[in-house]
Length: 435
Ligand code: EPU
Image (cartoon, rainbow, N blue to C red):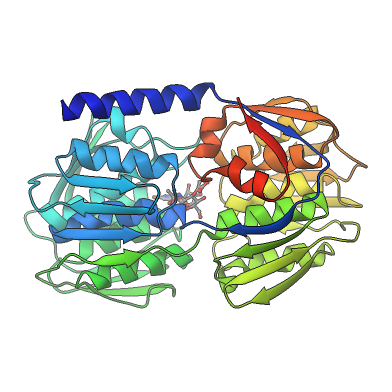
């Protein structure tokens, strides 16, 4: 009976999401205050990490997004007692009764972050079996660095029929140098190494804020991780871990997107519940464009009352400009005075929003990893489709600018990473509805 109900909920959810469209009438200035949710990319690692202790955890400040619902579903299918309360933004996870970590294709394909079950399963059981992860199609997304890390710790990795199987008799601390400073590999190796014998050192580790958040969560469960947030992370293996209650950091990408939306409409918005330090790369670029930004502890005020100037953007690992905000800011640059150059160094396939923006009157030329954006007077509403999560956010930015109504389809991509986007935008005075 419980399983039947769960299935019903999941089918109903998917059905609604896949069919829905956002209709946005552009030209209204955003005004007021928006509250930023928990960081998606931290949440999707912290939820799988919770199984490592084999105890009860409560994860707070989770965003109410599809990726969190998908992980709740994966944990439940594995036999974990997991319950997400979207109103309280909290997930209760009791993994004490599970004896293995196994995610099949049907559930793993729903999101990229299902690969974190490999590291979490190794950390808890010294083994895991997970189908190749899904996620947005933004270019090739290899996991060779994750595998290199697992193998260095002593695990055997087999890939058969689309399933990745990792298993170790014993995990032994070692030194791992990452060829690329991968967020996913850094987190996965930390999770696998927390209960390994001895010390693991990750060199050329990623430094993104969510690496620190995941390390803090693991430490709250009894792990001993030092140096997260720098490019050398030391993990001292511990024998036992325990459950914990932990609150996820605010979503810097959601915050950055609302900052861009405010700038796009010439608005005046308080972006509340943020860590301003994490927003520095986007704050600096928006200021360069002529947007006024003031910091107030845990909030920022964004005021856009003068014409926007062109800027050049190059995506880089943290603290460089985040690839996840490249698409939203590209939409803003379509109406900046002058010609801007956007260079995408992380994902070669992250320009799929460009053709859709062109339908709305944008002037953009793409050559490989470079987009040349010539500012135009304005955009016009059109029927467009989101091709991935941040491309969807870029189309919302463009729709807020455009003259007339824009109809955005494939909204399920946006729902993967932006909670109650239409409610938040309605609260800021946008004309938006979901159909
Ligand atoms: N890479 C490798 N080998 C690996 C891993 C990565 O070559 O084993 C390369 C990738 O191809 C890419 C670069 O390294 O060129 C960075 O990849 P990384 O591993 O850092 O990214 P990820 O873990 O797959 C996470 C976020 C992405 C975000 C990136 C970069 C999650 C679930 N995903 O992906 O988020 O763009 O870090 O910050 O946390 C999004 O939120 O829209 C999104 C795509």
